[in-house]
Image 1 (tube, rainbow, N blue to C red):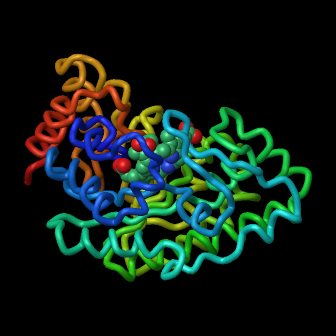
Image 2: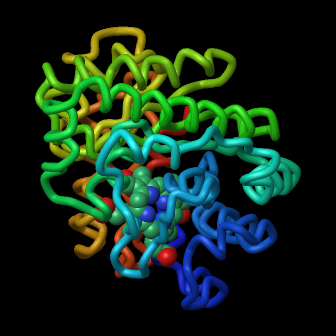
Amino acid sequence: MRQAGRSLPEYREIRGSGSILDAIADADLSTEITLQPVRRYGNDAAILFSDIVVPAHAIGFGVEVKPGVGPVVEQPFAGRGDLERLRPLDPEADTPHVIQTVENLVSELDVPLIGFAGAPFTVASYLIEGGPSKDQAKTKGLMLDDPELWHDLAGRLTDMAIASLRSQVAAGAQAVQLFDSWAGALTPAMYREFVLPHSTRVLAEFTDVPRIHFGVGTGEILTAMAEAGSEVMGVDWRVPLNAARDRLGEGIAVQGNLDPTVCLASWDAVEAQTRAVLAANGGRPGHIFNLGHGVLPPTDPSILERVVELVHRETAA
Ligand code: 1CP
């Protein structure tokens, strides 16, 4: 469950009120924050505590993460002249704290650690929009008006994702997840033309570990995203897992897809919805039970404890 820590009192206590980027820069703190949800929930894998904008921040693009908002960019990417602000990432020099956190975690965890990166499109959307956006209008405008510049930008972000993921895998991360959270804003045709080649290039570098590819509202582009090449496709709650399976065909696992807002309801409702997710998968192998998107901060941790317990009980061999 992504951002599982956000609902935990122990997270809020050690996280303080500073920037999340400062917390990420502190390897001991990031190690502890990654461990907290695993300790509390007993889930079967851990996801590194970091953020998709960490590499762009580290190379000095001028990205901050505003509490309660998300990533904001002081001088958004607006033209060809901005390409030179995106120099290659050197993980050893630029993000040594991430490498250190992964090393700490691999020695402490007894479940696999998932490393991650933002996919070129979703990271580009923050750099171009300057912050969270509902429609990614400027990003789509740049693609359509100046495809060459778009591909140059996406190419640099592809290299950045590869460098970051490679450093995490080299430090011991046992799987990688590529977050293309906002790719669902695109039509299948635009996804294929502007995004698929770049995400394919990222994922092709990591055939040595299981790869998870995730987005939100991606029902209509699920098969196009799967062409990028991954062992697992993330599915949000809008697409029942049986329908997702029908679209994706055999040979690919699915991850998801309980609606995170459901977890704010009473246990009876949460239980019914959790069982519905399991039923939609129908006992088929290759299902990573998860939420369809991140945990919402007001979620009662005891509800998530019960979800994990229920899923473990229902899927025990
Ligand atoms: O579970 C974890 O805590 C894992 C660490 C993690 C991950 C995997 C964080 C910490 N961020 C992410 C990835 C991330 N960051 C994604 C992809 C996954 C997803 O879609 O949920 C995205 C889109 C971001 C960008 C981002 N960072 C947002 C979303 C803003 C928007 O456009 O709506 C936000 C709110 C952040 C800040 C952030 N990152 C992580 C946390 C726990 C937070 C919350 C703020 C904080 O505690 O300071």
